[in-house]
Image (cartoon, rainbow, N blue to C red; front, side, top):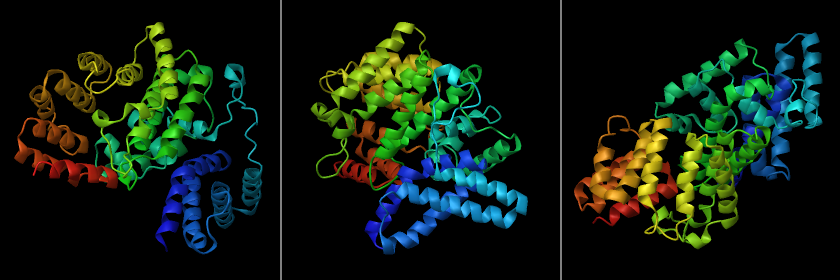
Length: 418
């Protein structure tokens, strides 16, 4: 199989797998069958597209092929009566009527929100599941992330995450979880997990865990789209608006994150004239609306941090003490070692690398397997002139880096130490 074909197939998978899975789950009502059928469809695509080329509508091709695979399995495994019912359900895929009314009262809320991906997000965030399982399952089914990518987000072993995902899908099946947008009264209980899942999908799009490209624009764009739908669905929920503001303000930097030669450009060195000013303005306006409600939450605070960067002419003029203060507030809402690590970077800019390194080193036990911990520590040691320890820290970071562009950047930083 030629490399160009491999790249085309991978691109289609990243862009379409979550959508196709969501569509099949709506009709089949079976998470495992939908996911397996989509996987089989991509296996067929790997063989046929290398000869026939990628079809004009690859997402439709995958959905149709997956539908047929599911129908074949149902015919083999079901009784004749059940086969007929299954055939009727699967026939609905040919129409894909996204405007059918919801039977659960959603119309009374904001009108029909016919969005399979949003339905799937709420299904994955069913209250029968633990918060971690909710987010992990959303990343797997909707984001199309590999198990090792999800494990990295949760700082756990890949085998542990695989078991969590299997148990979560089994629990949804055993609880007969419905595939729908929750009623108005149910939304607040589901919202936190939904926002967390959308945020992690965006993060994977912003900096991909593995692969050749630094970013996965399909994922970050899909997360922003879902964020807009959530704001429309819950216009009075400040955290939904806060997440959308955060994603817009962060994504605005994307044009400046890659140099002409394809190398990664860190925030401090980016040409800010290339930042997307329209996205910055939209995100800032959303943030101002949130702040007027005076109901601060973690996504609003992170959006405020992003807004400080967006409003600074360059790295040197950034108000780092203000960012440290915002991270202090964020730690109250989200006291995690990852937030503490991000705060340490701000401390190093406000009070010097030694102050930042002291905070980072205190997190060693909790973040020993977390790549950004070692990359951050390497940078701070280099700034302090401790080149031997910095090189060792870069080696630790490189050992945990699967993204080709990010690896090249870290190698370059290490080489500059001599």
